[in-house]
Structures are given as structure tokens and as C-alpha cells.
Image (cartoon, rainbow, N blue to C red; front, side, top):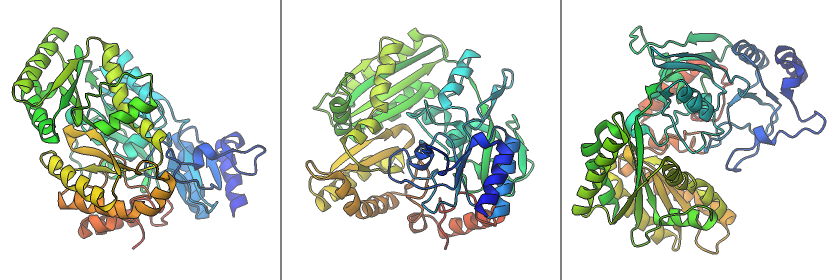
Amino acid sequence: MSAALLQALRETVGAAQVFTHDDPGADLSAWEQDWRKRARGRALAVVRPGSTAEVAAVVRACAAAGASIVPQGGNTGLVVGSVPDESGTQVVLSLTRLNAVRAIDPANLTMTVEAGCVLQNLQEAAEKAGFLLPLSLAAEGSCTIGGNLATNAGGTQVVRYGNARELCLGLEVVTAQGEVWHGLTGLRKDNTGYDLRDLFIGSEGTLGVITAATLKLYPLPAARLTAWAAVPTLDAAVSLLGLAHQNLGAGLTGFEVMGQFALSLVDRHCPTLRVPLWTDSPYCVLLENSDNESEAHARGQFERLLETAFEQGLVSDAVVAESLAQAHGLWHIRESIPLAQAEEGLNIKHDISIPVSRIPAFCAETDALLQREIPGVRLVNFGHLGDGNLHYNVQAPVGEDAKKFLKEEESRINGLVFDAVARYDGSISAEHGVGSLKADHLPHYKDPVALGLMRAIKQALDPQQIMNPGRVLVRP
């Protein structure tokens, strides 16, 4: 059956676009190993279709053979959701050849793009046309828009523009049966039944394959200013956020928080970056203000905001970037935290969301709990405070073997953190998705009625259970 399927795949997309371990000098590691190097699978084949029609034909061939499919974009995910298992029977469906910008509609403020487009390339295409595509995240130089939508990616500008879901108006999707849903509408109002778009966004490839999308565009702001401020407590950071909402309104596009240990890792492992540590303050925040009037207006807003913040004791020190290069430098520090943490050693990652008002209490309780349970554990706490999303990561104590720590403590630490998240009415996955790393945890923290509905949808749309099995939902 495998030989027949491989032959069918080669006839569909061309032999040059089907890769197997039997090929001379074959190295499939780029598709078989996840970004964090947590898992390495073995694929039956990696297939790279060049059109939606070819994607549909590949899915039909796999469905006929009963072979499961693992859709993959830039393979930058953090929850082991886009690499094959170790069975050697799964087909990795790489969408990177679907990389065309099909259309930009200036009057409708939309762009229609294929799933394999790299996010940064789309940002640049939008800017060249005089518009802003606001989805922005650390992996934007290699992640693809199909993966961003499949995981409902968030990033640094959610506080104003929302997640990937809010930026998408329409989709083109290949179903688990190999049919094509042509849903690339640019409409902002369309009440003609169930919203199928929202089913596929965030489904992590378990219901179908996103092949193209119509995205919202926005006018380019006249000015974008960035400030870096030291705050004495997380409570002060939350109060500063409220003050920023009051003073900047819709101009507040980003509000990030960074713990001092997270920043110290960047200082240690990224020596070319100048990190404003301000070690007497436990946290720093990074704010971005976008203004449609002028840079002078935006700077005046920022200065008034920070002056009030100093008066109220919310900020102990601050700097406003004097140029776009300085602003990029500050954002580069923030975006380098994950890389610096990886250099420090394997770690236990948590992508969680908590109501903003409850974040200080959650961190105080959970920090103390982890320190009590595992003395010396180091907490790398940073993230998108503006929308309640923290990357609450756990590093081994100094001198302890990181790999051993991960193996022995990950399950217990996950339980402690996830239970705390539940007590504070939060979510165990804010923007990274569930993948396979959190699939076993989901039944413990998701409403049972919601799980039942999700399983019913999965059964209805993918009755053969061939679409990215073992991700999001585990079999009951």
C-alpha cells in the first residue's frame, strides 16, 4: 500500500517534490524535527504540492490509502503539532510552495495570500502597497500564514488588532475528503449560516488544510513610538496598562512585560544587544504607541503618560526610543528572550492566559509554590501583558542538568502550573496551540460539554481520523 501511495503522490505533484528516506542522501530532519528539538518523527514521505488542486489530490490519495496527513508550514510551532510520529506511515504535507500573494484590494483593505507565504514577506508586501498587516511575532521571518491561522497565532499587537482569527475574513480549505471549500470572501458582514472560517482557524490541521486566506489590512500609521519602562511590581505594570489605555486609547498597539531574569538571559547570551536591566526593578515593560496624526502628537502622548506614571509611582525609570532603529533594538531584546532561554538550556514552557487583573496574584502564588516545591528553580516570566498572555517558563536550578530536570520534573511542574491557571480562570494555551504536548492535559481543564462538541465536529469533518491525529484531541 505504501508503494502504491508513493507512486500516486509522485504522479500528482511530480517525483521531485516527494521526499522519502529511500532517496539517495536523504535528510528529512527539517520536516521531521520540531523547532524546540523536543521530538523527532519519521515520515513515510514529505510532499510539497504547488497548488490548491495538488493539495486536494494529495489528500484524496492519502484518504484512499488510509494514510494520515501532517500539514506543515514553517515548522516553527512550540507544542509538537506539525511533525510526524515515529511510525513511518504518515505523510508530511509541506505547504511552502504555496507562496503567492494572489491579490491586494486597496479599496476593500484586504490581501489574499497563499498558506505558504512567510509572514514577514506579507508584512513587506502590505507595506509596499501602503498598508499595515499587523500580525507580528518573533518567528515572523520563517513562520507561514497558514500555520499562523491554523494555530490562531497572537503576537505583540493583539492588544489593538486581535489574534490571527480577527485579522482573517475568508479561507480556502481542502477538506479531509479532498474537496476544496472556496471561502475567500473579503466581506466583513456575511450572516449566511455557521461560520466555517472559525472552525478551521485554530484547529491545528486536524479538520482540514488551509491553502489560502483573505486578510484585513490597515492604513500605515503616521508614527510608531516605543518606550521601555522599569516598574516596581506586577501590580504597577497592570496599573500602567490601565493608564496607557486611558491616555493612548486605540493608539496602544503593544504592551509587553519582562521579568529581570528573562532579561538577564538575553544580556548573557546575546552580548551584541544592550539590555537596559535596571536590576533594582523586578519587571520592565515595553509599550508601543501608533498614531495617525504625527510623531510629535504621539511623543506628546507618551510623555504625558510617563509623567503621570512617575507621579503615581508606577514607573521608576523609562526611555522613549528616539529613532526607528532604537525602537527595533528594544523590540529585538524582547524577541530574543526565547532564543536566550534556549541557549541557557532545555526548559519547561507554558503559554498561558489569565485575566489581566488577576495576573499579579497568579504570579505571586505560583512563583512561591514552585520555589517551595523545587528550591532554586528559575522562572522566566515574560509576555503579552496587554492581552493577558504570559510565557511562564521554568528553568532548572543553577548547576542542575537541564535534560534530566526536564525528564523528571516536567509532568509535576505542568500539573502545578495548569492547576493554578485553572484556579485563576485562565487557559493552558493562549497562542501556541495544543499540539501533542498539551493534548493529554486538555480533558482535565476544558469544559466536558465543549470537548464533546469538539469531538463531534472532528468526527463529522474527518471521519477517517487522518488529519493530524493525536493533536488537540486524544481519543476518549
